[in-house]
Image (cartoon, rainbow, N blue to C red; front, side, top):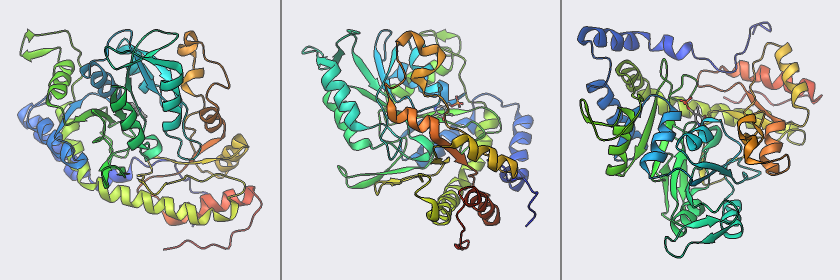
Length: 405
Ligand SMILES: *Cc1c(COP(=O)(O)O)cnc(C)c1O
């Protein structure tokens, strides 16, 4: 083991090297047919990804952000509606809400899972809102607008606790759009249905991102909407392609939001390896959990409830002296990340919404204590050992736990 060898936070080179021939062939076949937009590669990937997510339908789009925005619009979110989500997410979640014309509002996350706290959702609806007897929807007391939709974010690879969220949504006629952009293949055990359910198959629709760093990433931009709702999928297909029902016949204004064929072909190749990559990430997480056991008093490790099978898009620990740890690891050539340093309600574009520090204390705490450790499918156990040794060094605890494999 070379101590000077850098340990990257994520490795986007190895998986592409391993699959280079297959990936290059995708591009060659696209060149041969000049099929760059739409066509069999896109349809093939959509079919495979729907099957992977156990949904009837999948519509490929140009990014996760477009997937969220199109899903909201296709689900009937109107200008002036309120759409609820969590402050602990990537800004794309709230950009999609605003760009669909709606107002973003928030409920805090659960202190152990960091995903939407169903109790907080219930409190929001039953304390801050009143029931509209005509529509059956909840109207916010101050904004006087209906709460049309809710976006639970399956953060860091772990699903939100969906049973109670879906139940509240059904009771108060809210549309549920899953933000599954970090959760390709994550699973949730539904007590209500007594079975494991795939991320992306539980809401009215779900949004996936294929940004290169995601568990399933394109060699460029990409995204998808999954759903079982034929009408919703049809609208998303219209929205991604200028509102065309057929070429140059526009039923509405849409967007240029298509998934291109080369990316679809690349994703189709990579999808065949996703389950294996996710399995390796789970192994890596289990090894971190074991190796970091001696310091659980100083840091908070990820918590996976018995209803969750996380795919560890990120491995996020909490530590009060976050900056010190990052600097220390950086000094030893170890890459880290922060997801996310500022919760959305305190970000500049949302100042007009009038939130202040203290409004969502759990999200704020995670934002100020979170460190993402190196996590990807191709991490070497020796590298992981070095990350942990370095951490234990800082926390002045000696490890006598060997790499378990
Ligand atoms: C990556 C991500 C998105 C946006 O996806 P893009 O493909 O980058 O547009 C949305 N939500 C979450 C939680 C994400 O991690």
